[in-house]
Each structure stands twice: as structure tokens, then as C-alpha cells.
Length: 187
Image (cartoon, rainbow, N blue to C red):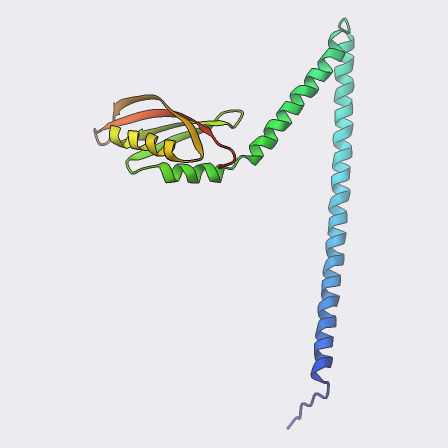
């Protein structure tokens, strides 16, 4: 018969466990630091290669511009910069746009018998054009009314609607287009 006797106090066992946990955390931090530094060095190398490519292309553009009368070169540079700034600003605005907020607002406004086939925001992300189908004119007018009542939407306009026969069921289906503006602080 073996007798297992542990004479270490409970506090000493807790300290030992705490030390092991701290040692593991330090080891994990060291591994994370090494991995981060490797990723950082790869990113810097990639950035350096991109800068080389960028300067080579800029040199090619300057050489191509030097063959002309020379007046187009400096004037194009600020124009290109302004276009790039506008492009980057539009990307930032697009990333700040809440698709989930828009879709949940549309879901609350969508009645039975109405379905959306396309949701197309405009370039400034201040408005949206909706295309869809409705079973009845009452369902379509109810949808427009519910959109107008939602606090996230303003200036709701029914741009077009028309009927067509469904090939499968033979029923009349209303196709429609709606244009509405967004209140960005509500979405």
C-alpha cells in the first residue's frame, strides 16, 4: 500500500500554481512578440517593394510627360492627388455605412406580399434606390407608407410601378422602384 502524503501547505500550492500561470503568460507574450515582429518585418519589406514600384512608375510617368510640351505634367499632379483624396474619402464613408442598420430598417418596413429584388445606394451614400415586386397595389402602398413612417428614411418617392404576368403562377405582379434618402444618424 502506497501512502501519498503532501506536506506542502495550501497557500504554497496556490503560489506555485500562480507562478506557473505567470510563467505561461510570459511565455505566451514572448511568442506573440516574436510573431508580431516577424509580421512587422514582412510588412516593412512589402512596403519597401511597393515604394520601389511606386517610384519606378512615377519616374516612367514623368519621362512620358517630359516628351510633351511639359505644361501637362505639373497640372496633372494636383488633379490626380485631389481625385485620390476623393476616392479615399468615399472609401472611408462607405466603410462607415451601416448595411445592417439599413437592412434592419427595411425589414421592419417590409409588409407581407412585398419583396425586394435590388437595394442600390447612391455614390454619396445619402440615398437608396429599391427595386422589388408586390402582389397587390395595397401591399405596395402599405410599404411606401411604412417607409415614410420609419425615422431613418426621408423623402420616399415611388419612381415607377408596372404590372407583369408571373410565368409560373399566371398572377399579376407589380414591379416597382422607390427612391428614399437616409438619415445617417439614424442608421
